[in-house]
Every structure is written in structure tokens, then in C-alpha cells.
Length: 367
Image 1: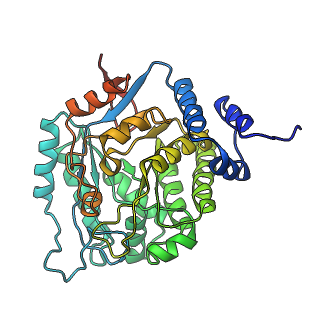
Image 2: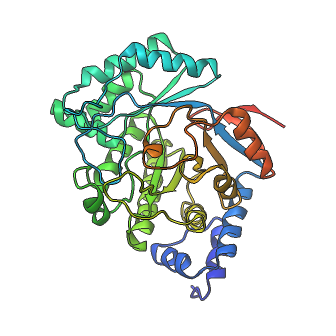
Image 3: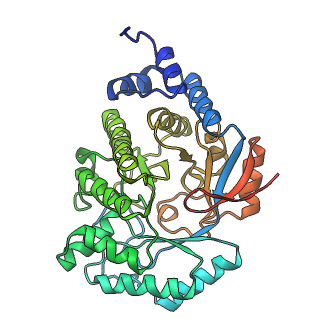
């Protein structure tokens, strides 16, 4: 087998659908020209979506509670249980938010809170059943790996049993929140109580085997080593291989964004726009078994998210309708985008917008 001697050969192999090793990824990120890296990622997007379509989702984030005991140094949203600012929404309050989403023509809610030491499984199953009974057409992507592990700990039950109970109660998907960097060196530094990268992977693995919708995420810019970023991607890729072989139900998509430092205990600086685009493009090259890469307008802003559509992303994300976590950390780009604004941003980059559901089925195609 001939020795790879240039980054150009690595890029060409990735464009053709070949797989890059960890070592090749390290070299490519460090040595490849920015424009060539982005162009290669764009070529892969064009191969996967030759129709020039960019998708988006009409949904709403609902933070059912801000109570959390994990103390992540990068989070400005959570409150401890005794805080006067702590809250837990009632079923009816959550229902009214879902009704507002329905009036928008939305199809999914993203239910996320924190690690609450007082809520047992019956709270979560009761909430899911309430929402499915009253809003059966709305997909419920709910909680996160660290939240479901907390339920399993409280109940002293295997995580697979907890996920099965949640699924039966109406939970359609387990979002990929909390991945941050999938390496314990950085996780132990920024969120030592949030669980290991192995526990995050195991939760997503079990959700995929349960038949739930899952997505993969990465937050970078915590001062982690490049090796940790590449390991994060290869670990996601390994699980995708495994789950697709097991039952065909892998991650629907990957999305990354840069750490937002304002109002957090950690502080620090934001990564540049060029670094964000490089990470999006690099992810497209490394994640050869992922169909969809999403841009992140809530953290990066609509303009930079639009540029990401030329760096490998084929999805603009979602309307969100309400966003509290990233905006609390100083991502001052607005907490919602209308359908018209998203479509305008997609068209401005030369693409055709399409409304999708949470499983990336196209619901409506626009000119």
C-alpha cells in the first residue's frame, strides 16, 4: 500500500468517501490549508446532497427546569435546588408552550432540564404521557445522557430499563447534549460530575438499540488538546458503525459549536469564526458514516452558520422558538429564528430550503 505523502491525497480520499484514521485526521487538521479543507468538505456535502437542498426544523426548546447539581463550569443557566431562581414547570405550562409551537406549524419539542436529585422516573414518564395524550403529533426528543443516568441512579435500575420505560411513555429521541468533548481529560476539568465519555456513549448506544432518534454534538474551545477533538469524532464514528450494523438506527446528525464563556464560572475566550468553520469542515471529513452535519446559528450567529453551509453542513438547524442555555452564556444572536428568516438565510447562500422532521424526512420543499 503506497504511503500517503500529502494532505491533498488525504483530502481526495475523504472526498471519494474513504475513511481517515486518527493519525491522518491529526495531520490533516494541523497541516491542511483552510480553503482546501473547506472545499473538500463542501465537495462531500455536494456528493451527499447533489440537489442543493438545505434542511431546517421547526421546533421549540423547552427547559422544563433549571435545577441542576452538576456544577458545570461552562454553564450559566442552571440553579441549585435551594436557589430563589430555581423553577420546575407544570405540565400545563409546558403544554401551553407546545400549543404555541403547533400554531407555528412545528413538529418537535426538545425537553431539557438538569440533573435534579428529587425527580423520580414517574415524574418523567408522567410528563411524557401527558404531552403524548394532548399533543400526539409532536415528536418528543427529551432529556440528555446525564439526565437519564441520574434517573437510573435514583431508581437503582439499569439504564436500559429506564430508557425503555421512557420510550414506552412517549419519548421519541434522546438528544446528544452533554457530549462536550468525549475525552475524560477535559471532562474532568470542566464538569467532573457530569459523567465520563464512556457513559455518554453508552446512553446513546442503548437509546439507539431501543429505537430512539439520537444526535451527536461537540462543544470545543475549552482549552482541550487537538487529540481530544479528533478522539471525540472517532468515538462518535465508531458508535455509528456499531449501531448501523446492529439495527440500522444510528445518529441522525452531528452539530458542533464553540464554547460561550460569558457569565460562566470558567470564563475565557471564544474561538474565532475561522476555527468554527475549520471544525465543521473537519467533522464532515472525519465522519464519513454521518449523512447530516448541522450549522449552529444560536451560538455562532446566522451569518457564520450560513458560511458553514459551504464548509460541509447541509442543515441550518432549527427555529428553536425559545433558547435559554447558550444565550445565558452570552451568545447574543437572538433566541429564535422565524421560518422566513431561516429560509432567507439558506437562499442567500445559494441553496434551496426544505422543512424536515427530527428524523430528517423532508416535509416540504421550497423554491
